[in-house]
Image (tube, rainbow, N blue to C red; front, side, top):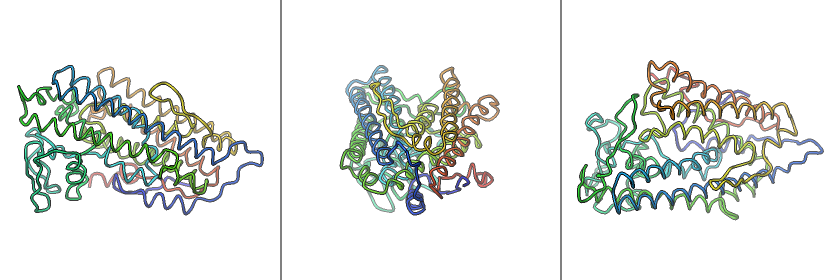
Length: 434
């Protein structure tokens, strides 16, 4: 079974993947003396989801508190504290991304909290180098913070009050343009850091705290900028609470798995692992940016936190395969896993995949070490940086290699024709430059 080249936009592609997995997953037959109940595996998978999303909610609430402090008393100290809280909030959230693929409830929701890339000119002021218009997006420089009225699809829209409802109900993907990201982690990231104008040189965004100081305002509209940041963090907390509820006992996401056929649920688990590993992380988030040497293709592009986002995506894949997640408070949620199922059908494949998951983490840690040593991810993918490029490519190669072993694990359980997400950058690289 080869890696599927299921090419699709970055969001809204789960229907085909989920349908393929559900319709074609064959019944697998465990050994007669198998010790692991597939239903117990599914329950543990749901329990880990609940823990991950609960940690995401808790850290988002801490971010909300830090944002409130920044708005109430703008200073370098309160801005730095809010930035630190944002980075901390990314750690548990990124580990949840393995739940997107195969779980339609999660994928339909994901764009509200982690939509990217975004045309930041929709939200706030931008540098002249950004340009003033886009043939693809009429709202490219709408600057809601500076304007109390904008036009969407030929209609005047009142933006005088910046509220969560305005962000989520009117601005998010306005005009059916995915780059009009008005909510979620990356909108907040932009508001805390501002644009990273350093290209593939050193340095992240450098928004001054005085952008929130109404008494000594820089950037203009400091009160409305605070309103936007507060609305965005309020919305993030609310959206994460919704997903926590989906994974509680009786929640919609949990019931969809636990009330269905265990075989289909096991397929969902592997669909998430393979799709995040191959098409999304190795392809769209890493190989594409490396091919183009383009810092605009890095995931956390304003804060230069991309190396951590990639590391914790990979960590989430390993968490789910092994059925164990270390929570923010240090406790561990663990139980029966798909690794246990594979071990009982083909121990060699389980050993192979476990080792490759560890190898991928090691390659991601190497990127992190370079970043923490002063060479950010956008510098590592820069043109002419031979060593940095090689470090990123090694992580991409590890992700591709582990995906092949994920496929072998699927085959060992007689789960046929699971469609993993693909990427032009991996499957048809010539198209990237067309």
